[in-house]
Length: 300
Image (cartoon, rainbow, N blue to C red):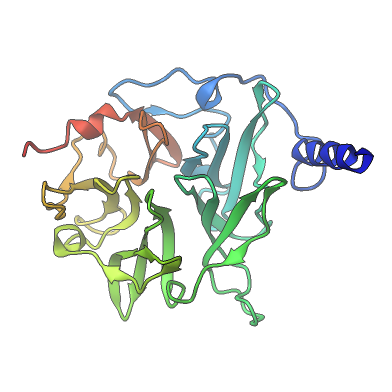
């Protein structure tokens, strides 16, 4: 009995420490979404000065299903490549100050995505590939345990078999990601079947005519949002494709100028509660009411 109580106290103490073993620093922010005033149909900077900061580059936001953990990518030098996975946690009624994620290393890692069931978090990492001393920059994941997020694990070589980035997952654990396999660049899908990720399939031309990147898949796979640069490198815009009544992907269409205002819009994400649409613009993270997605849905 005594040993069990000590174990519980130990686990509680671990939850109150950051990745360096120091007490987590609480911010004055309370309430859902770091206490920010929810946006309407006009995009606004998310958590300015806290998540979206003036001098750094931030993108790729992802929340846990209960909304109590936030992950995003930051690099202190806008022109640099030293990306880190940052997180904030709702603890004791307040959000912790953003710091290195508990599973992350102080190396180039980025674009973390929490699965819809909250059991896994996928991310790009420059960790050395297992049984290899060379860092290759592929997809890793961590699992949620009673003691927190696990140490990173290398995703199967069925998927890690070439240039790859930005994984998102649907409710049935299928993965969608950007890749360039056999010189075929675009958006791929790997079905999760019998507990195994299947050989990636290149999505149809209704989506890949744009050679897009950073796909966010709706939990029920009813739509896919991604970015593309049809007007040339450095001119990124956001697109969406819906499924028709037969389950086929419809030709992707571009969001209007409310979203695509600056040609820097990319890396889309929709909150687990389906209320808010997040994306990157001009070095910051923006958010807007997800009603704007429904306004894009075509009539059957």
